Image (cartoon, rainbow, N blue to C red; front, side, top):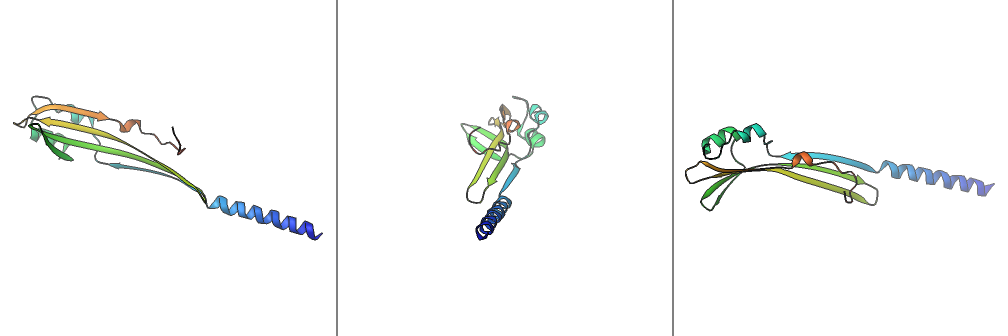
Length: 135
């Protein structure tokens, strides 16, 4: 009979340990953005060879960065979308961070007139990927 009590006690102890370990595990999902959204209608308002530096700033606001290159002044606008997730186990943790950006470059000539507009949008394709390995 003493062996039976020890076996039951062991089973209860193992069950309690499993319960405690399962409570200490967890998951997290986080999302953040940096920069303002680049609205297509605002970008479409900028016309090559017509729009001026002042009109660009009026339509889009102050640029995030101004670059000087090859006689051009380049206004850069950007927006980053960040999605992070994690699986937290007692001994081992897994996490994954995905970042995509929308970038707008407006090239101004020496007279301050728009010479080129380049827009790349990728944040609309950013997904949560729960599993931390591969796709």
